[in-house]
Image (cartoon, rainbow, N blue to C red):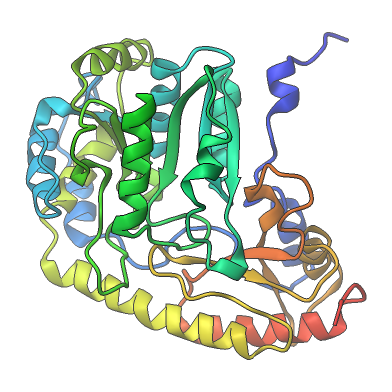
Length: 399
């Protein structure tokens, strides 16, 4: 039998999706599964986007330009301007979801063996994209005890060597919900400038900032304009995960030309997705306001509920719609699987993402889970009851 590639063998399983077969089996047994594992919003997509799809009147669904439709990119300029992000349409390349933007950034900026410094826990697919590009993720660990704040500069500098080419951040953060402060962003800027690194900044959750302080984009940092690569997606802000439309944005013209080679090789980003995404920019302000207020209420419901369960602790996330919670269990991978295979309460169970999959360091996050508050409050309250009952019954409970 032919062998599997080393790259394929090294590719990690998704901590978010790897338990899906167990969830499917639980549902087949008649158990209701509360999905707290995945960032799939349940709020409606803007009606203007759905109408745009319904009203498509084309005889051919053709290739779009490799960099995306100019009309869409020009409208995005105004959207970013509302966040004090000043870019031109030519700075924006439309991608097949934010995932492709990350992959193309890695492929365009990094040679095999080059290293990227990433605060962990981090979005698990960053590791997968790095492996695809032959790059190496080096992590600086943040801790739940310190609220996942950024480590001191010396922790970064301990990792920097001749192979270091970039720092990658997600702000607001997935999986922790942490929001970087101005001081922390300036710290990153100074490192990028001192060592002439790329700064990959995943900012897909900018709509969901719950702190009283302003949202700080990598594009707000002075002196590193040519180093910044911003990653974006419409998946979360418009509940449009399935249309697969993202963006890679940089003022670095040489880098854009390189990225375009990969864009041309994959031909074009989704046609129908761009139609929906462009229309979404015309959604009424009430849409974004109502979505934001709903997540505020869900956040309070979830965090208050988690911290009332004996032995459970979650810091208060200041952005996105996730939190990482510590549980009184021996192994969160085992616990999450056990919930789906062996437990139900009043005909229901919970599905969460074991946090170990968001760390690359060994034996970290073994008693933590990522929880997404993407369910309506009524369901969140029920899920919290089920989780508390599961923790009471779990044979590997530690306290």
